[in-house]
Length: 504
Image (cartoon, rainbow, N blue to C red; front, side, top):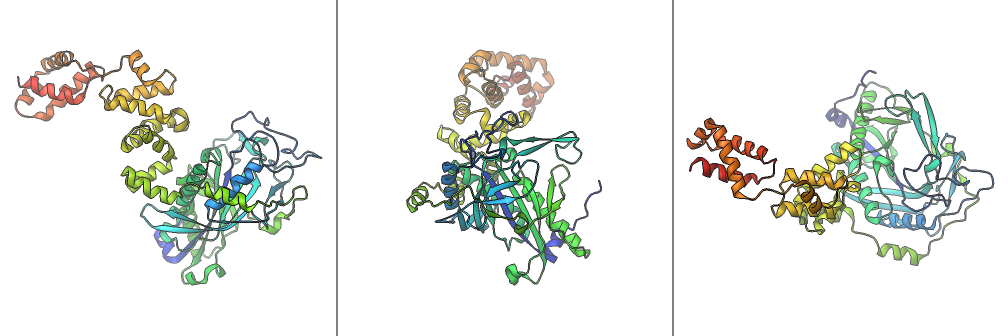
């Protein structure tokens, strides 16, 4: 497939103003689904977490999940929204194979939360206030598994299977108003906003927010308008596209940037933008057409006749407001200061979803830099190799036990990596693995001196260089000694002994 022709990003910004709107879907981690008692768990065998309500069978009636309502109110408050005294559900009618009822129970005219603002902070320190139009409750659809082909997408698949396990999982959809003034930062604003939402829902404890599992999904609306209309507000907006279900922060940024460049190229050629959904392709870094974008009228919304309106008490709202965690922007500033991370270091931690893990590791007695080093380094590497999530492989307390052995001189970094792998493989505690594998650093100077003398005798040319003042030549001897000691030696102590013995 030929590459899509796109305009240089800087030129696109010179000619057009980008405007974005973001729709973030958050799956709530309640024990049961939104309108039924079916389990709300990830990874079960296909079509096992089901009740007649999930499948829309005749006579099956929905019942609202109270915990989902509480979670939704908490999220609305964290977004700075007003909480509706009365909100209701509606039927959103459309056909798709993973919608057994041919409609989705959602909220339309009366969302649970509305009119909010979320403050985000970019890597440059720029603060942006993202306007929230609404946050409404709904049920998730099922999932199509496309079989055959190389990408797992419908393009090129031989056939598709329907798994209704996800049907009915409680969702909150957060819809922004159009975001103006992003300019060259527009792609980063989209990514930073989703990262902030992820931090919020994680801190609230209402969602696992695993983008790779679809717990948190983003639809990115992008439109352009010619320069000179900046003061026109929403009265002059370009035709938008909606890139669906982008599942990583990096991909959100790349997808928004690509759409800006693609639309700018089309507009410069006199081609109209088609209002449509688009699919993001991680492998090519491009979007492709999906289906024509529907407007609200196309869904034939009407009030859900089987559910009464929701009327949360003011006492409940204030109770939940009092339980709100620290706002992500304030937390970010506090942690950067306390941990003495650079903005880039902290952003790497955020992107990896490891802020909470590092915070817990520090609480277990590890320095901030050491906690970051091990989580974003070795643990992330192992997780990537195994297709796993770092925090599911090992606990902060287990990492702290390994770092303690490094700090007291029992292990060096190379040996510590072996111990971490052993912990992850279930071989026992750090101390048990060190003992069983014989991994402790050799601290006996007698053994080290013997290894140093042997290495010097085997490499007389290197010995001569050291004696001639070429201290850097000692690296070859140190390497030989570390190999002979199977890495179980303190490299700094070995260096001292090499220089001492060479000049004896």
